[in-house]
Length: 443
Image (cartoon, rainbow, N blue to C red):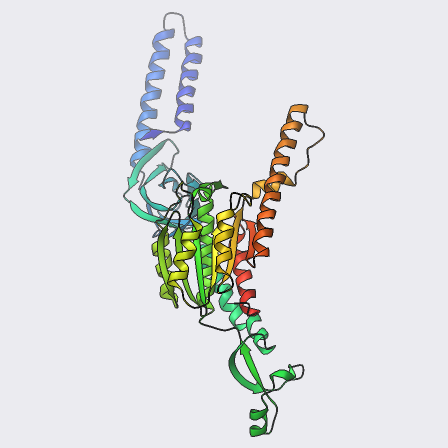
């Protein structure tokens, strides 16, 4: 039981009344009268506080089952409170202290219904397993004089995974595309794999007319083509030194993992065989290319525990391993980062070795803060020292971008596809590039 602020105000009011009465009373009775009034006032008030606390009927609070949490996302958590109309409650859930939360404490008054759902979000920045502790409940009495506190046993273990929320959205988007824009492209004849025959429509490419079928059916028939299925996609994810850097609170490796899983999902939806390798000095994890949704579940299970290491990656060893494992032609996507052409000479050499048998694709994760510094001019209102510091930061950012561009130019000259995107946007851009490669039959 804890007194409320109203209780303390009433205690102060009792002291004020006792002081006024003592001032009115005679000199001989002043202290006796004030002490008696104060004693009776406090005794009655404490009894009312005790009675108010005794009248509290504890509400019931239930946390909905915790989902698998997505790193770097606002994950909703819901608590259902059930009690009497008029109950006022404060709830502090036992979320891990490392999480960013939208509301550390939830408050509710059941003024219309006996049950109500409360929601808040948690924003984890590190993958792993975490323990949710018990919920702490505080409920105030009907007179507003006392709080009653207790705990509700609700310990649970929850895992923080790669960005599963983004994967769900991407899965829906791909499913819609399969019956929308992709179908329209098939009707236009973009693709190499035969899908079906249908009647000729105005505007169809005459080169797609199937003359044998036309002669047999006595009406113009055209071949419907679609992007080739059962191609091979290999994703190599760097977990070396550069991938340990943090961008917006998350490691570059986590952004790379989200991009790798998004690309893998797109490949599986398009019927391709997808494999993933995670490497530093050697191949740390290798999941051979396979088709089907079971492969996606395997990716999430195997990749989630992996963390980046302060090691220099061996690109040549990673590429050599892929060449030994993969005989048929494949799109090989390397997700990493580049500083400059000199520091990334090994990466350039490794990717160049993949040509012409494979189609190499280098994906780098740029820091959005570097872009911001490079495109921010120095305000005139700033002091001399601040202006110098801002100009120096901008010059360094511009130099970093210039060095990266030189490295990308070297890659492109050797026939390597390149995507350099902000880390927080790379997943969507990578999937879009892959889908365009499929539609244009570049693989």
